[in-house]
Length: 80
View (cartoon, rainbow, N blue to C red):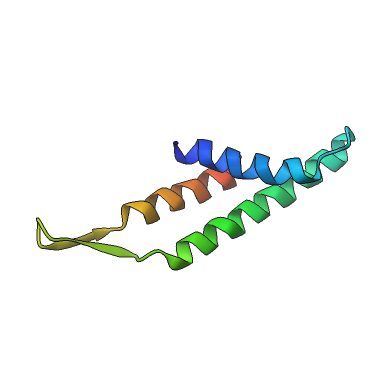
């Protein structure tokens, strides 16, 4: 799943908990709150992931790929 798809899925999952009204103002508020909640969830994931990973075959450290993925998800949340 791409970071953008993951960002959309997180926001939609949270929004579906709240949306039961067709009022455009209400839906807009729910979308903003859902983005904030999704961003908080991604921050929690990032807090538990190591910043770097050791690649034994190259005997060097690189940015953690999973961390980079979640950073992209957070960026996509902010872009939506």
